[in-house]
Structures are given as C-alpha cells and as structure tokens.
Length: 190
Image (tube, rainbow, N blue to C red; front, side):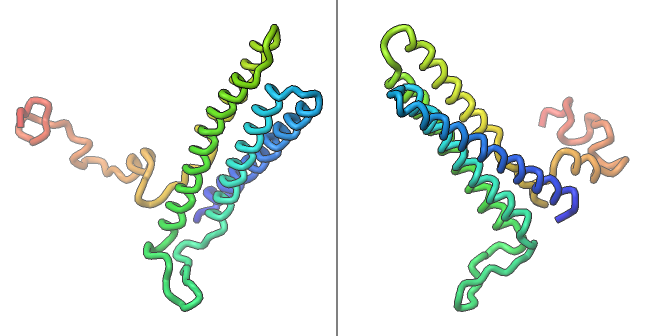
C-alpha cells in the first residue's frame, strides 16, 4: 500500500470517527426528549443517532483494518489450514466492501424507520407538521450519509479512468481514427 493511499485511509477513518461522535450526540439529544414525553421527537433522534453511529463505526473500523492489513497476509485457522482462498488483499477488500455495503443498507432501512416513526408518533395539533419535518430531515440526513459514507477501496483489478489513460500508449489502436476497413468502425455495418 502506497503512502498517499495510507494517508487517504487514515483521513477516512478519522472522518468516520468524527461521524460516530456526531451521530452519538444526536442519539443522546433524542434521549433528552423522552423525559417530557415528546416521543415523536425522541424516537426519530434516537433511531437515527444509533443507526448512524453504528454504521459510521463499522465503516471506520473496516477502513482502519484495510489500512493495517498487509498485502498477502496469510490467514490460517488453528490447524494451519489457509482460510483465505484469494491471495493478496483482494479477499480482505471484498470482505470490507461487503461489511460497508451491509452497514449502508442497514442505515438506509433505519432512515425509512425514522420517517415512519416520526409520522406515527407525531402529536396532533399545530406541532404535527414540525415533528414530521424534523423526522423527514433526519431520515434524509441518514440516507445521504448511508449513500456517501465509506471508503471505496481500489484494487488492481479495478483501475480507475486515470490509470487507463496513463497506460494508453501513443499510437496504439485506441488513438488512431477508425476507417471503414477496420472492424468496429462507425461506417462498418458488421
């Protein structure tokens, strides 16, 4: 793993650690709404805070694990049998991506629960619209966090567009204009 990639992963883990604190404070502030009996505000805050903190924790821990794992590390059980059939860090990257995907889906499901709880527990009267809009705002924030959070690991099997541009050789088949005689041309009907 290169130095810039390690810095990127460290920064990602730190930012997700901050997100854990923010979501936990949101859950804590929701607990304050329980005492006066404001369940329409308390439940969405608590559910969104716990789901966001849990999701950010899972993502931060997985990003940190990705950073600390050595490429090609041998994962064996107690009997010395190799448990990881894929060499290098491709298996670890897939495991971490699956854990992040699962936590994102759980946060998205919790966003739906937040919205439903806000509507169901909203008080009757003039505060109903406010409570529902706060729950909707929390649901949108949690859904956006679920969509945007996480580190997308890059592997050698998935080069980015910049990598493809760097590896293109001047004068290669991709740089020459196509003619009617070359297959795949715009004029070629085959």
